[in-house]
Length: 299
Image (cartoon, rainbow, N blue to C red; front, side, top):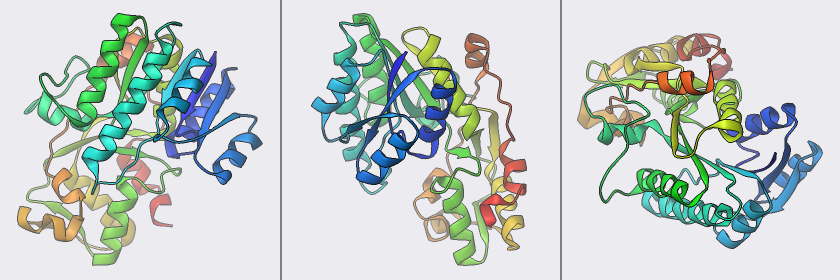
């Protein structure tokens, strides 16, 4: 397949490109700057210059492809709604470009959308936000709706912890940095809230399987650990840094955990049973706590 990848030089996108090239696909990547373009070209990947703010350019690249994997996103938590709206425009532009060809559009979302769609229980691939929703939940729904027009749209929900030695800027490195700065690794209350997790390489393989064969309108969960108690994550970070893991009150969460203070209080257990059965996807790489204990996050 001819596959266009946004976010192709990022943490997950780089590994997705490896998966696609290894499977014999022809890959083109979006490059926002010269260094990204050079990195892609050095790997034999075609280059499209541009960014999320250029929906017409994204549409042209999608139209020239048989499939799109959309991983680019502006992770600025001070401008969440603005960034979600920008992402929505980009997804709709690429989806519209694929209507005539019936190509595949695989987009990344997050399991945290299930905090509202499946409160108080383990979230599944069948759960989706309903009604007038915003953020990535709205983009999910808009993408899935394109399936009725012939686009093979697939949503891959990523957990808050996509971990590996390739992870330099995600939530885990942020927790490590904050714990190092404060001299303690914090969790909120009893720390019983659960976060799902997946290794970067397992997530990358799922994106390849999704673009190759997932049915239209499918929601998939890139989840290996269904739910790791946040206090266990904090304790693993503490072990790695040699600092204590401490409980803080909800009103102290932002002081100790920054923007993650609110997310640390979200219970987000997530199943991937349907995903595993549908695409015969089996996570093979280390789970979150053993990966933290491996030490690479603290080097």
